[in-house]
Image (cartoon, rainbow, N blue to C red; front, side, top):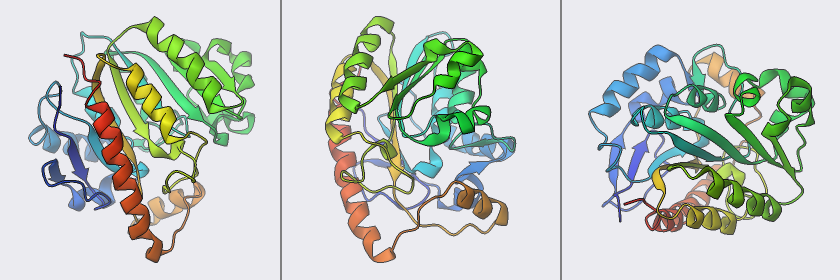
Length: 293
């Protein structure tokens, strides 16, 4: 079964085939990129509800830069509330961080954990220090303690979870191969329809370049995961493309600097975007073999 992909085009990072649906959202970029107030997010949600296909007909959504990963929450909130799903997130960061100003690309997983249709969340491939002891207080603890959210990390130990009664939520591995082998067993045991959200910052810089600090996965690890979703995939999105943007709001510019987003030479941008687009095509070809019927 093939579902046409849809591009949420905030940042012109994707030049995918014209046959794919493309929704022009450049005028929303300043409001939504990195993070936004709930009022602005709800306005965007109302706008997209008039543009997007029904969730059971929509193909993989391309969100652009990882600065837009909070759009995954918007897509998840459109799903039926009475059908439990398994949310599988590939990301170098937990995206379960505290953010008191609305929702942002690093806090959306927490909000997804509050949705009634999301029964379990596994975040795979974390190697950032967001889950280190020094940042423990920045993580939302409640979904971890309840067993709804699980961290699967590579060479980043979140042993502090034991101290808050969430030892079961920490899965630490030395290498991605070992993580993937163990997770595939869990994926089969959970046995629910799967929503897959891929942030390509999970990948090594040897594979592709993103706007954020990156992990250790290879493309083959994503292929293996998608293949394991065969017949159970009910929704998917991809983020982690690369784009340049100068914030007009000093507050967003300040926050993005705090998060140490990497600068990049403009002459490299086209090369890196071409590599990203080729990777997107390969991943979507794989995803189109995994949809449930």
